[in-house]
Length: 249
Image 1 (cartoon, rainbow, N blue to C red):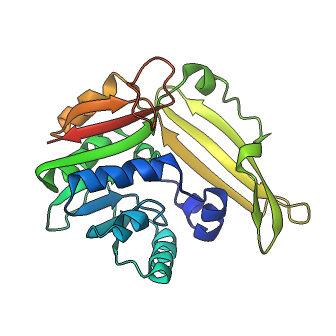
Image 2: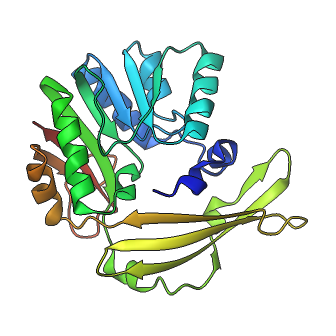
């Protein structure tokens, strides 16, 4: 589940500051749907805090206490009410239903086994109110990119950031793709000139290929009703960078 990667919430937010079209998409979806909102794998609240600021009753569930602590701090700082809960998206029971449930930013891909994905979808199904929507985004696997994961450590220039305490931080990643498991096993290295590799953390993510996704959903009691290929709502097609899925019970 890559817990070590998410144990440094402050650094995570510096590396992934949030905002942008993904937040706009989920925020607009919550507004259209109305009612109560649940985010699974909510992290530090990048998407849920803006949704809650629009007046929606919101619950955020995450496995990492460090991420939840940072989410709580940020929500309190902004005067936004959110119910933060520690839990496992593979199996949870909140004792209520929701009108809009979502899993953002590839968080679903931390579930590597098909049984875990189906269990998650079954738990989501039990928490959907009549007419509710379940929405999530996962990347669209590129066989070429996965095949190029050769274990060599390379710098990700786009992920470099400035830490007010450390200065400029570079990010290197080395990964190997496990074909039978459909899981990429990566190691992330965060460094400064004076402090090389001050963070070394594993990160693993499953690939969900387009044809298997509707089947996994159906086994969980859900139906895929729309699939977009990007945040602008273009239809899913060859070369689409992501699978942005709208589902119902």
